[in-house]
Length: 189
Image 1 (tube, one colour):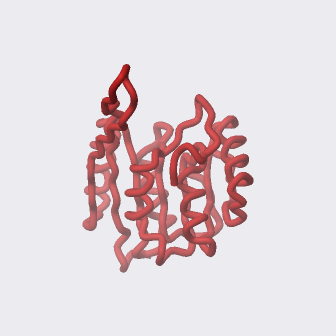
Image 2 (cartoon, helix red, strand yellow):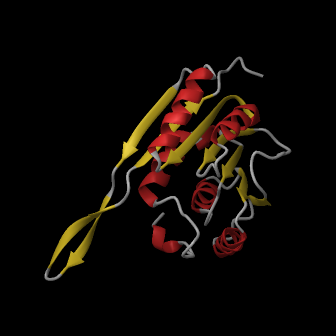
Image 3 (cartoon, rainbow, N blue to C red):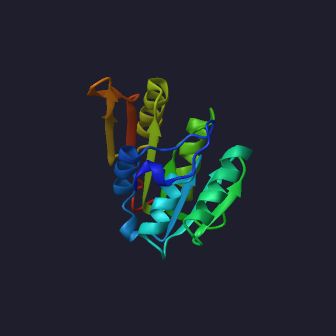
């Protein structure tokens, strides 16, 4: 989905289109029944997932009041009735285990969120995380390794967008984004 389709707020983060496309692919949602989106922001990941997979139950967790309002506006704008919005700071109690979890923000609780996410996932479930800080990437990779996660993928994305400049055009770079995907072991309970 094009980023311009979403209602936006200045102080509310949004997972951009190219990063969202990779994250959604790595979540392997065609086989999922429940997705948890932590740090949902504008809701771009939740909404695109909900629209692509109408039978998918989506739980969008967000703590920022401005983001919660925008998330709800986007949910209504796209008529996504399969998204439940949870106001709060993760890790928090969620009634149903998930087949896929997306961590778009950690709020300074990265290792606790990874532990929580691995507990919330069904065996074989997918965890996908995005970071802009190299320190968070390194912390996540080290913690996943210590947690015994074997199936792990990691990519750095550097996206540039063509924009006008005078009578010509150039590619304006965005910040690099690090994307990690892993799978909970099938035998875990």
